[in-house]
Image (cartoon, helix red, strand yellow):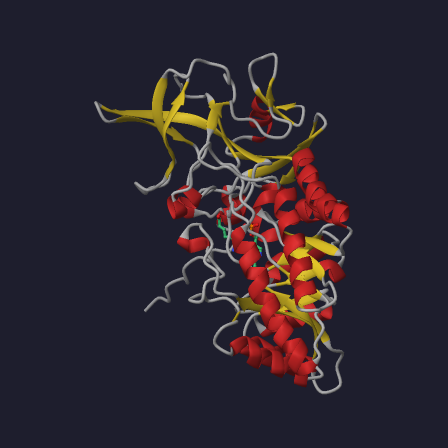
Length: 439
Ligand SMILES: Cc1ncc(COP(=O)(O)O)c(C=O)c1O
Ligand SMILES: N[C@@H](CCCC[NH3+])C(=O)O
């Protein structure tokens, strides 16, 4: 059986999370419904932070809010003393609306606009992760000749190919992100930033990809980054205060995935950074990381109501649910796999193999292929596990399906943190056709 965090089967045979019956939640808030196990998110945050603390090194663990951004979520991140990675004006706005301390916000993005940068500077974000020359130019113009220097990290692409889906690789040379470490771009960016009063260079950032299970990629990236930092130290005396090695730590979606504990990633990163700092005779920098998926991924569960069934004789049985690629596009986009149970009959005999279809008008709108479940009837509830990262945050209104509600559960208490969209919401920005002028 496939349980995470506080999830268990209660005396009614229902899936319970955070001490709350998910069937009751489905009845109260409707479906599709995103449920987050808050205790599990807290446990992960503490595991990351505790691992750094055990090593006695200075560190920041920034929650990559692209994985799931909402006012309550950034407040939870603040409660857990995390920092925050935002990647757009919208994520920054959400963070500020949640009262997140600006000095712990790191602003990312490969095409930050003038307005987004102005907003970040106005609110005094802790650091801007500069991605390209155009952005450096914008920052210089915004700061002006007499303005205060902006704390920046240079995002570099180390040329490390992590083992993951091509669409979520980011550290390879042929990438839209960052300054290349190998072809002189990073050096040019470094010279430019050092020569300008607009910048206070804190150090470098790199992120090699997402859903990574091996530590090798992080080790290689750290080595490449330090080789460059050592050059900059030699030539200009630059001493990095920060090395940010990004996020990307993998989680277990199905039995095919075999992640290591978060502390093991931290151990390996700290060991390598210590070694590299020693080898290159640099003072130990502060280490920053940016986990998204590994903080919230397996804390999220989506509950759907089962509707229609279609048998294709001798081929397969399709069971359709009341959501799909509109609330979880990952199976359609990456071929991502998930586990599921019937929330109202978790322990029922898994006697048939079915495929779970969404309700969007696309053949590719399939959530799970070939899963063994108890015989599912209309009105049963399907719980899909590990949807907490890049599920709600990538949700859309395809076919004009309203986005689901999101509920946080903890210690027997449920709290609605994102309301379900209504049909009125769907047309709120639509304007009617101009009236025809009589001829
Ligand atoms: C720059 C950066 N930092 C952090 C993350 C978070 O990654 P993950 O959710 O895999 O931890 C991403 C996404 O891949 C990213 O692009
Ligand atoms: N959205 C992706 C990961 C991209 C991470 C952001 N760089 C996923 O669902 O796996």
